Image (cartoon, rainbow, N blue to C red; front, side, top):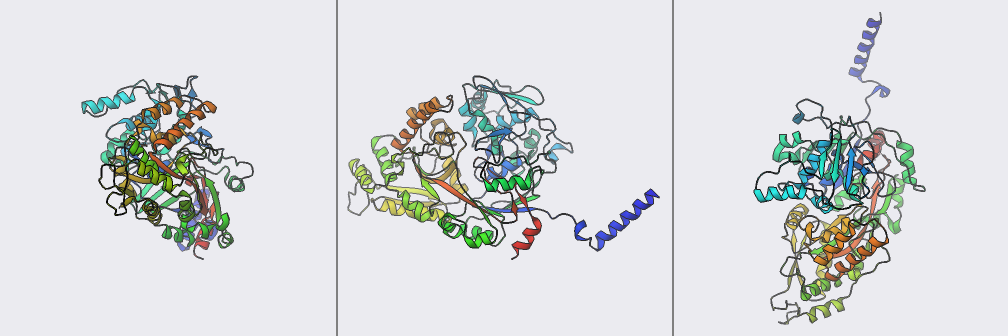
Length: 604
């Protein structure tokens, strides 16, 4: 009777399904988070990751550590480790123990087997950054720390022309057993662990996957993170789906006192399993107007970094517009450890070099830039003037520090140019170089509205001091490739940092040329200052060294740092728990969607 009753109930359930089950029995709505990037991705291999691809990769791969999402900025906690790493008293040896039972997403490379994450995966992944084939963008972080033996392994591969030897053991990076690996450094590095929070490049990849896909590995990211890549149309659309193999991780956050949005997130989500949404759909929408309209029309759940030209519409006088508030849209306004700068290629025959006349030229060009007008007209007050490369939220930032970096003084700019021989010899209104050849500058830019407006500011500012400038327009990804190869004379770009200010000062560190150092600045005095602060603990003595670095950069001006950006995000009313941590690339795993409200309100 028991089996017969069970069989009848199964038949009844099947019949109900076929004719449409009641709402209470229906399958739950799939939760989809839709979003847009302004800049196209480049691929998803951590050994060659760049730009917006970092954000996507951070949800696919798993670094050993992570920042607490709602904790105080820079608060670290284990991610794939059983506990925080053991750190030697001299900050040179770090022992990390991987938590057993973590698995990679299923993939044909594993031939039907479930593949567990082990210590050797991190050893292999970090060695890949040193393989000359990959030109890893984040290699400078490990080289700067001096992981013993890996730079030598890289040099041997370059000198011999043979493939990089992944099987050769090195002193600085070893698996001690199945779940334990050790990193040893040539010098003290009190903040080294900050590097191991970034899943975009410090996440683990499996050697089988790399060997299975070969040169197509950037199209097939396979990690242990909460999402997996489900579909990809280059420069058009990226789709992530929940990783079925993702381990049990639950929302466990503590809201800072007085932060109402964070408190609401914790109240709604505490204890729920991550990720909370089933799917993330990312569109590439370079122009800001369609991104803004897509959000207003309910086609996107979030708009991170409201385009400056819509700031007065979204938040007049710094407050959420009443029409948006009435719709239940929520606003988050915050600073980031973020710079926007224009760099001068120090190897360029016109703007580069360390001789007095070249230094004078760069300083004059910087003095001609009206940052206050840029903030008012182009950025609609969503920025503050920058005095150095070190940005708010990072160690070494001093709001009281003032330098020439933010000065607007066309008269002083013209006096400098006159003094060093950049004068108008033929009377056509444009200055020539000291040798009499035309002074013609070329600035790389992109075709989007913000880039065009910034280029227009450069044009007006330099015309006012008699300097001719032309603009080379290309896609951001193309400019990035050219910049990394040292082929651009000038370019404007943004750069975000970590809680450590030296991750911003590295932009001018000589050995980082071609990686973080797009200006290709290589001044021995600056390199020594940068190296001096590395082993120092945070505090007044290190801040004093930071000050030396700031003064050298203001004096030589390889970078004209325009502003530190202020960011405003908006979330639809059906997004539950949205918040932002300036040091976490993506918060997609931490937000939920009310799918029924989404369907109902998105159509109104």
